[in-house]
Image (tube, rainbow, N blue to C red; front, top):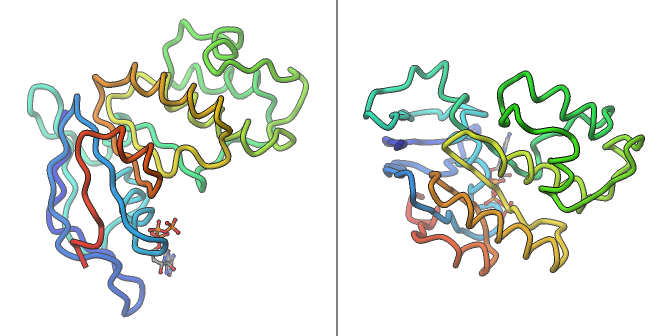
Length: 205
Ligand SMILES: Nc1ncnc2c1ncn2[C@@H]1O[C@H](COP(=O)(O)OP(=O)(O)OP(=O)(O)O)[C@@H](O)[C@H]1O
C-alpha cells in the first residue's frame, strides 16, 4: 500500500495552515508528523484519514498491486484514532463490539472476551462507555484501531491520557502492527522515536 499526497493545502478563511504538502507514505513503514501546538498536525491527519478535505491538492491511495483505490473507498483501508474521533458513548463495550463486528472493521473471530484480553482491561460489562475514565476510553479507541485488519493506521496523539502501564501496552501492540503503514502525529519523544521517519509540518508553511 502507499499514500501519495500531492500539494495538499489547508486554509481556514485567510489563514494557511500548510501548503504544498507532497509526500509518499509506504506500508511496512512508520512516520511521525511533528510540530508545535497549533501548527496543523491534526488538520493534516484529518485530511490523510479522509475525515476532511484539503482546500487544494490530492490524496491518492494505492493497493499492494499499485492500483489506485477509488476515493470513495479509501476510508475502508484506514483505521484512525484521535482525541476528536468518537466512540458510541451510549453503548456498553459489548454493544460496541457487537455493532462493529458486522461492519468488517475488525476480524470477525473477535468477541467481547477477546477484545477485553487484547486491551488488557475487564471493564464492568454494564457500564456505558461515556462513564469510563478518559484513559480507558483512549485505550478502547486505540484497541479498535490496533486490532483492525485495515492496512493503514493513523494515530493522532495516541498516548493522550495513558498511564505508564497503558503506554507500555500501546507500544507492544503497535510493534505487532509493523506490517502496516503507520502515521503518528505527536510531540511526544517516545511516539516520535518509535517511527522510522519524521517530518515536520513546519516545513510546509
Ligand atoms: N475548523 C477550523 N476553523 C478554523 N481554524 C481551525 C479549524 N481547525 C483548526 N483550526 C486552526 O488550525 C490551526 C492548526 O490546528 P491543529 O489542531 O491542526 O494543530 P495541531 O498541530 O494538531 O495542535 P496541537 O498540538 O495543539 O494538537 C490552529 O490555529 C487551529 O486553530
